[in-house]
Each structure stands twice: as structure tokens, then as C-alpha cells.
Length: 440
Image (cartoon, rainbow, N blue to C red; front, side, top):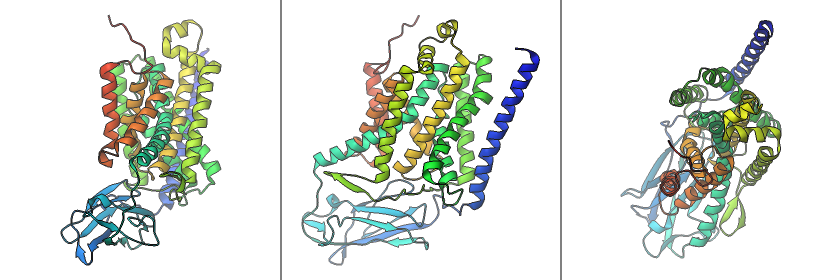
């Protein structure tokens, strides 16, 4: 390549980077200027209520409140009262009274409601909602343990497939570059925020069939930008693996607090996040969006498997993952393949972010960080650098995480995924599909 050609290529790359950064900054600016104020975690939006039996307060009754901001659990005090703070108004919350914590022979009764211990309420613009439960003698509506297991398994598979979309990109990057990218969680968050800027009512308000694919494309462009500006120059300087990991941690922190600057510390919703659940079989209920998300995950994973095994680029990616030096000696353009791997990893992470925003539901500035350890657990469980291993590991982690909530508090369920990781590594350190390597 002549000096003139090299200078022209560099100028083209600089212009491309400038255009992409300007586009992202413009979208962020539009969202920031048009979005209403978002409630932070400490804002005094409150759901409260009373639990009484024949006018007498009941103490120690457990309730759970699910909605934007995640699941919260609370118990009634000596006056039978309870209260929780929530991050948003104008959205729906589900309040569930745990009948197992009621005195023997006592149940929530309502002849017109099959599940009177579950109430859906909408936080008013005034920021206050009261939910009272009328308690009396009666029979409890109890879901059998088998039905609960089936419900959790279905939810776990759905969560695992969504997690696999993000974990596959993470393991491809590690396999081709050796980078443990701790900023991959922020790539997941970026996909959700890009979708919010494109389809949210306070931004461009594009139709979902147009806005969501554009968000995935922007996420892929972010992956390309990160490789072009940061990782490729560091690879050429032969920076060590430990230094690259530290750089990725710094990048993660930078992106995370940049997101917080633009969208605030609260939780925001994508259109349709409060869609009603449809009974399918047994205790299994899914909304239309849940079913569409599950279908999209399956289709994308099948398409990715076909690309990895049948396409020329996919075969080159596997060759570089197995042996980069031999792949380069065989005539494979390693830089070009790595560039496409970063684009694909960014696009898959962005898609996972959109689906996770509906699964939670809601978008937060640190939502990707919540998934990061589970992504690493899936990758290591399946085998470092193996895409199919990441898929299997993600499904196992998803099912274990959801099933564990039958026995442990919901706030601790993500820890169960790390526990199963430790158990597997004690008996098979290379992971499920990984290969043993000789050291020394």
C-alpha cells in the first residue's frame, strides 16, 4: 500500500467514526431534550397498604411488588401496614400477598377473582397508591409445586436464550482476540437505550419494526467503532491480556456513567412493556411480546449457527479461535475477521439488550452490569471460546437461575448461576464443550 493510499484510508476511517459519533450524539441529544424527568431510586413514589383480619392488623405478612426497578419484598408491621418506594409513576406494578405467611385457615377471599392475593395497580401521577387486602376464612388458591417448576423452566429457557445472544458475542471476541471484554454488559445496555431513543414516545417515536432493527445496526456499529478506535491499535502494539482486561474495565465504567448522564438513574420502559399475560398451559403465562422475544431468540441463534458452520467467514472465525497463527499462515485476513466478529458481537448484544428490557421489564443505566457475571458464567460453563458451549451454558444458567427462586429469595437468584459455575469447574475446569490444554 502506497503512503497516499494509506493516508486516504485513514481519512476515510476518521470520517466514518466522526459520522457515527455525531449520529449517536444527535440521538442522545434528542432523547435528553424531549424526555420528561425520570424518577431516581430515592424519589418518594410509594405503594402502601394494610393487611387486616376482621378489622385487626396482621403482622409479618409477606408481600412482593414487581415492576420497573425490579422485584421488592416487604412484610407488614405491628399495625398491619406496609410500604415500598418505587422509581416511576404512570406505570403498572403487581402486588402479590404470600398466603403462606397468613395464619392457618386464613386466606384472601373474593368470589369474583380467582387470584385475589394478586393485584395490578398503576402508580398515579400523584406518586401514591394504596393496596388493601380483605382477609377472612376460606380456601387458598394454591399452585402445585409441579406447575411452578414447569413455569420456572419455561421462563428459564426464555431467559437463557436471551442470555445466549449476549454470551455468544462475548465468547467469539475472546476466542478470536483473547480479550475478556468487561464492557460487554454496556454493549447490551447500549442496544436497549438505542431502541428507546428510536421508538420511545419521548424521542423519534419510530415504529418498532423499523426502530428495533436500526438499534441493532447501531449496536453493531458501536462494536466496529470500539475495535477501530481502541482494540485494533492495542492489538498491533501487542498489549498484554491483563492490560487489555483493565482497559475493558475502564471502558465499562466510562460507558456506564455516560448512560446514566443521558437517561438518569431511574427505570424507563419500551412501548408495550406492560402487555397482559396470556394463559398457555398449567401455570405458564406469557405475553405476546414474551412469545415474540422467544421466537426471535430461537431464529437468530439458528441463523448464527448456520453462519458459523456454513459461511466462509464463520469457518474463518472458528479457525482463528482454534489457532490464530496457523489461520494467518493459511492466508486468512485475521484483522478483517476480527472486525466482523466485533460487529456481530455488538449487534447480538444490542438485540439481547432490547429483549432483556422487556424481560425485566425496563431500561436502566446499569442493566448490562447485572447480566455481565451471568454472561461470563455461561461462557466459562460452556467452554471458553466455543460458541456452542456459550449457548448450552447460557440455557443451563437461565434455567438454574429461575428454578432457584423456588427456594431462595428472588434477590439472590442470580447468585445460583455463579454457584453452578463453581460446581462444574470443580469437576470439569475446561467447561462442558471445552478441551483440555496441556500447560508446560
